[in-house]
Image 1: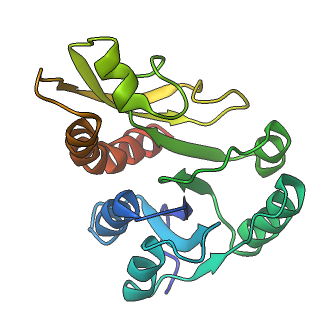
Image 2 (image 1 turned 90 degrees about the horizontal axis):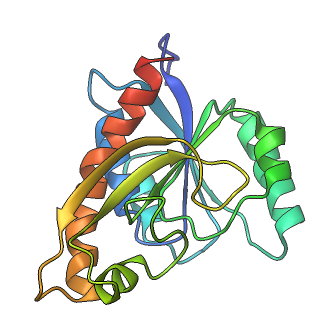
Length: 192
């Protein structure tokens, strides 16, 4: 694929089903796209998202996670070899170290299923329901060395209904994740 000027070489890191990967791939094929997905990386051989990567003819690799240091060393090599300018974490379930973030020294984006700074980490939907929040949502933020604490690029909220369970709320939030991740990429890169 020829390198068109202005598009950022992007790697998407996944651990699972890859539904946000799918929405980023869809966006990357549009005329107005500011990214070119050159690589999909997973820490999980069974990640369904690898199927989307193959179908979309995107290079993909699984890096086994035996320990953080060896994983991050291999990851950095692969990213550098592919001239990656931007990383999008899309359901990637490992935490990248401050050392890795410093060495990569380019933007890393993450999408998180809550209205940060609320509910960093896991089990966000159940925590929002237990606390009787009126709204939940999704946040795209820049990754820094503190969990789910980087600069917020974009957020969107959804109403939590009395009838919502963790599962139904997860489905609602996932729908907006698919919409806001590409928008956040545009917002970030258009201001570059």
